Image 1 (cartoon, rainbow, N blue to C red):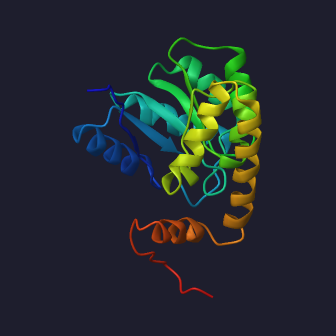
Image 2 (image 1 turned 180 degrees about the vertical axis):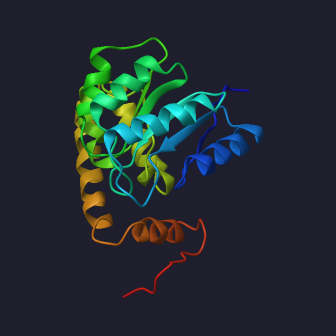
Length: 205
C-alpha cells in the first residue's frame, strides 16, 4: 500500500509529562512527534529553547515543533532556526501563529530533512503562493478535507482561477468559524456532516 507517516501530538505542562506522552505515542507506532510549548504559562524564549532541547534529547524520533501561539508561549523565529539547525532530531515546525515569518526564514536556508507545515488556515493560500510549506495541518480539514485538498491541488496544477475561487470560499468559511468559540463551529460542521454528535465543554449561549 501507499507509504504513510504518523505524527502524534505530544503536549503537556511539564517536560516529564511531554516525554511520557511522546514515548507512549512512539510505542504505539507513531513515526514522529509534534511538540508544542508547555501550556498555561508564557515562558521566556531561553526557557523554551532549553525545554525543547531537553525533550528532544530524551526522544528517539523526529520532533516537529508546534508553534501554537494562541494557546501556549509562542516559539520565536530565532529559536526555531537555531533548534532545527543544531538539534539533530528537531526536524521542522508546524506554525499555527498566523505569521509566515518563520516559514520564510526556514525556506531561506533549507536543510535536507527539514519540514515546514503551515498550521493556520488563514495563511494557507499565501503560504502556497510563496512556496513556504511542504504540507498543511489544518483544523478546517478535520471536518471539510475536500476544501483544503482542492486548494492545494489547484495550486499545484497551476489552476489560478480555481485557486482564487477556493481561497475566497475558505476566507468566507473562516470568517463564519471565527464568530464561534474555538472549536465549536468545527464540531457543528462535523455533526452536520454526520461525523458524530457535537458535544461542548460549556453550554451554548
